[in-house]
Length: 247
Image (tube, rainbow, N blue to C red; front, top):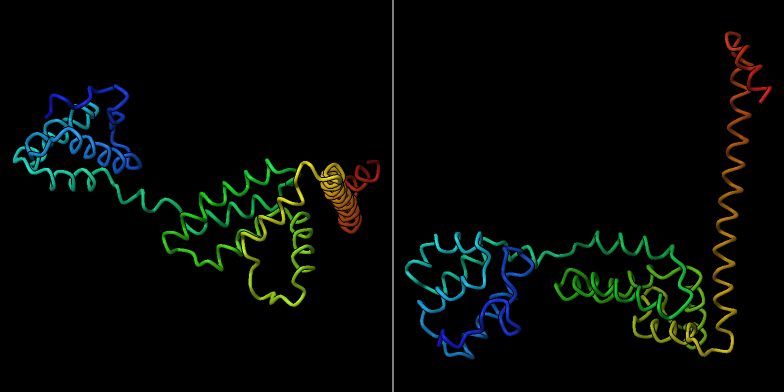
């Protein structure tokens, strides 16, 4: 009966519903399980009891609905899902979210298993959801997963995979499970050359940074030369040319 329903705020009670679209489905599911467990079956009891687990603002809105006053639990439940935008929760991610994650991740070095697992978790959170929602094919999922791996590690993984399957059709993405297994072997902390692999990644990163600095210095030099040429060719800017030369 309603008398055996858990008091608001207790361990068995659902968290107070404050109107968040991402919580509404879980809240209603939890509430209906409690009703079944406590034999709360009538529409009147279900409609009236649910408000004790809602914030004051939400309660006032629900009490104003016709299906609360009637009462009709099935229709009231539909109203709550509708007005609190439950469908937004099913539109959680888009393909561009995954592309953004992939672009960001592929420039981050992966020196150990902890960093690798962090990449996997982040990818599954977005890519796994898209695949399950049929917004991504299995082949696309594998392709994006591969592209998100740091380039130096990806090269090592590819070498291992190709050595075991040299005739592989490269028009198809490497299976995710095989990529993960290979990466874990390469990054395993007990490998005799684990420290060498990490230092190599660090060295690559420093090399990339050094190349960028050299490029920037070269660019600044070229810009300075171009500035001198402009002032020298322009009669009205002789004073400015002298200043540039002094620099």
